[in-house]
Amino acid sequence: MSVRKWGTGPYPVAVIHGGPGAPGEMVAVARELSEVKGILEPFQTETTLEGQVRELRSVLERDGRVPVTLVGFSWGAFLSWMVAARYPALVGKLILVGSPPFEEQDALSITKTRLDRLTPENRMKAKALLEQLEKPEDDGKEGDKNALLARLGDLLALADACDPQTTEDKSFYCQYDVFKGVWNEACELRRKKTLLYMAREITCPVIAIHGDYDPHPAAGVNIPLARELKNFRFILLKKCGHRPWIERNAAEEFYRILVQEI
Image (cartoon, rainbow, N blue to C red; front, side, top):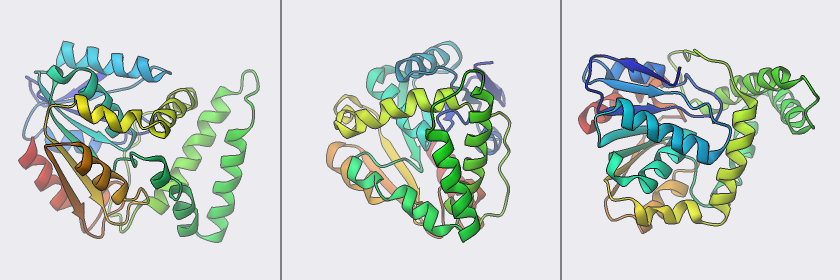
């Protein structure tokens, strides 16, 4: 399955999952927004950056009412950004939720911030999982890496949240091969500033929604995008971590903003 549809068509909005390789995170957002409009929930399966860009493009062309509004979360914010730059006619508005920073120097503190927020026991577990994921993959052990990535994601989610009121709905398994194949390419584009300079090809309005407790630094999104984009707004949510929709103090405001923007 490449896409799940929520509500009734047409489908002018698509929510794009984080990860890469961790589909299913935004199911609650898709469900909520489907009360207002038809929502596409594409799933990224390709193991290369180019493959994921083309995969999302094909879903939007086939199933969306273009130009669509893309609501991209975390990695999905980067993927939505790249699709909007490559295929501007397909995207009418870009909403970046909990986006990673766009310049390399702003990304250096993320892992340390997350680890520092964990209890000593969970910090040790997370460090051990990070080391295991870095080890060369044995033949036939891909499933083990998927399980390791899922366990690490559970731990980091504790550090990412400010005051969560709900648990996440995990509909799909983590896919380590997707994560490894795509994220390294994206980091290289960020390092070379290619990712940031895609702003020059983006013609639609861009809105970034970010929590003030998100370990991904807000300034790493707000400052470079405000500098590079002509039509950009930044919204900082108070008492809010990486996933606004699970936050006790921010979820209502987050959904109010999204409904207004779509």
